[in-house]
Image 1: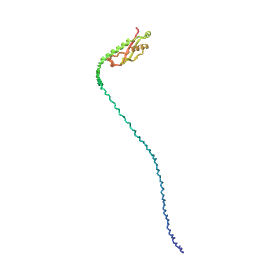
Image 2 (image 1 turned 45 degrees about the horizontal axis):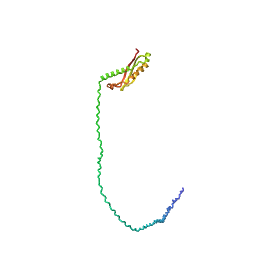
Image 3 (image 1 turned 45 degrees about the vertical axis):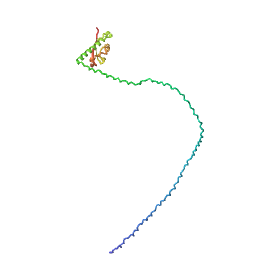
Image 4 (image 1 turned 120 degrees about the vertical axis):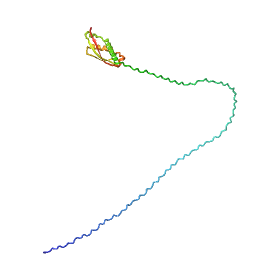
Length: 222
């Protein structure tokens, strides 16, 4: 047997890497330019010259005093007048006018009469007076009734029933007539109209209006 001996290869030694040197930039100084100060413009002062106006002095000439003329004094002799008699004038006496103040007239207090209370009669008396009043109303209507000539010619006859109201002023209102001849109806309305207004007695005035008063009116040929 042959032994193969492989030679040992020594390890490769890398050379050391040189250090990287970064170049340092030199610092550049900023140069600041100084600005020269601008020259100031000198403002010229404008001096206004005032106009000097010379005032002319007025020369007043002094007038020479003229010689005054001497005035002679004239002496007037006063005439002596006799004193006239002084007559005293007596003025008439006038009374002073004084305004007379009117004396106030006192009005007399008007005393009103006291209201008289109406004495209401009892109901029995009122009902009796009402019956008498309605009886007089019927008599008045009968007295104003006429038999129509046309109804006589045609021999129309019968009883007509009528109902009506009497108001507080005595007027007749709300007249209702049963079915009958037209000629007789017309005559009934005429007789009621002629009887109105009816005199309302004061004793039963509180009972008005009276409603549904019924009256029978007969038309008969003899």
